Amino acid sequence: MPCSPAAGADFDSAVFSGNVTFSRARFSGGTVDFSRAAFAAGTVDFSGAVFSGARVSFFDVAVSGGAVDFSRVADWSHPPNPGWIDPPPTGVKLPSAALATPSNPC
Image (cartoon, rainbow, N blue to C red; front, top):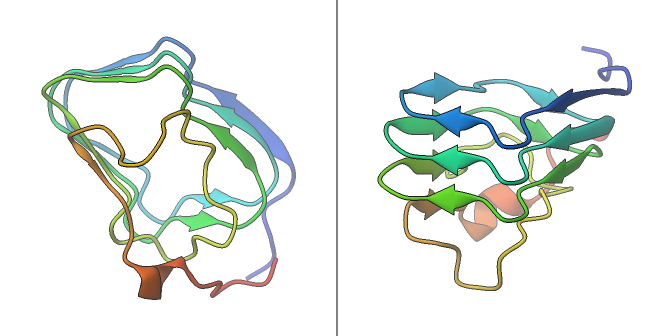
């Protein structure tokens, strides 16, 4: 499958209050901005997502009752810029070290 073209998406200040899936999404170019987003309820799921080159930002997010699940990504070779210092906020699940290795050389 070819790499996704450079594109972007803006979720700046979005409020996620239900289950949302970015399953199998490809973040391989461009900029995707989740800055100041609020994760208030439900789960935002990134299962099978590929983080291999896009600039993805999670600066100043609020996780208050919701969850952000990166635990089953397909490629974490270019992870998002989280905007937090370890450990991540409660409700954020990161991939294991085994999943953090590149699997898609885009």
